[in-house]
Image (cartoon, rainbow, N blue to C red):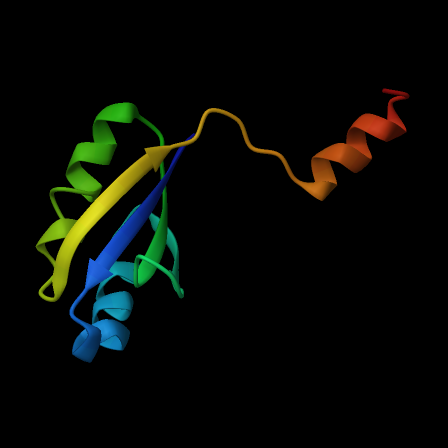
Length: 91
């Protein structure tokens, strides 16, 4: 599974509609409305690297109200759950 974190600048008058439209795209697991330099953060999870091109420039960036995006592809996922598993193994 490949995870991409997509930071999206959107038309501020349309943020809820843009977020809902992005959340409906296949491959998008979550969309967060956030503070800071971007308006939305979308989590994209796909099976193949090539699928990112279909989801992000092919769909996310074409949603009316999306002004720009910046995509970060994850290398490794860390979570409290993973740490608890490691400690249970004696690491």
